[in-house]
Image (cartoon, rainbow over all chains, first blue to last red; front, side, top):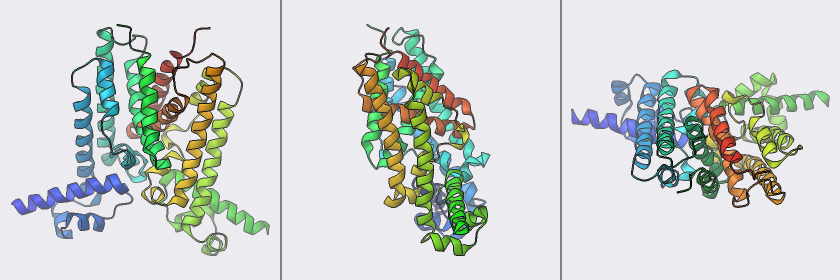
Length: 193
Length: 193
């Protein structure tokens, strides 16, 4: 039935947004129902409860993150250009990362069903970054002394930590400064043409 | 009175630990009272409520962070050696940063009294890192093309984001990989002796 599917979609979208805004611990079932505009019956028709709906919400947020990262990283250009496009892509900095923030949620951290989609999304982006660096090294665009897996972790950490700094000071510029500093370091690793 | 001061100290220490473990939203007043082993009367004798006690708890965690960072950064050595000592200092990686994690707490992010000590602690560490880089540049140890403020934001972000990656995958190695990648990039910015 269209109506039932619509209610399910609205529940997942509302939970995904609330997880980004308030986290798992900070989101009550009634807040999700209010935002989705559906009754409690719908929630328990489609899901076993808050945790089950949250798994669907995290998967939705993970898909959004993964797709945005791939679009920036998979396009044309040298390895540096692709990393730069990924690092400089438009972001709602003060909202933070819809996936990274989940790691600070005590109930997500201790529940494998909730943590697993978070782990997979971040590992996926990390591996995509590492593949770009490996390609750059194979093409002679990037110095070979750097371990792609280490550098990929550094790049993704700079973004995740940049959100932390920006949110602490309510100042987007902290995020942008962290990215500028990283890009300056990365330019030092581009082989001379 | 000694007893009253002991109760106050135990309340602040218990709140500081719970903020690190569960965040502000995830910590109930009764959880703090249980951990501190004091009654509700003590809480309201020393503090106006949960938020007031949390401000004291965040200040305590901020002092711990600031002192550990200064010890590593203020010691002897070249700029690179001091940054390396700071980046490689012993950390309880999977617990994350007791201050950085506060930025993901929805009620801390929106309450200036709670957010301010978080902002000051991270800005303080950032400025200490920037001062080390400036000194390194003045002594000719570090290439001058890099903006100290940007690089300081990158360094602190790598740590904060490294915690995020490690907690997502329940794997300390993600943190250590991010730090190794950053150190490799920084070595490329050390001027030849």
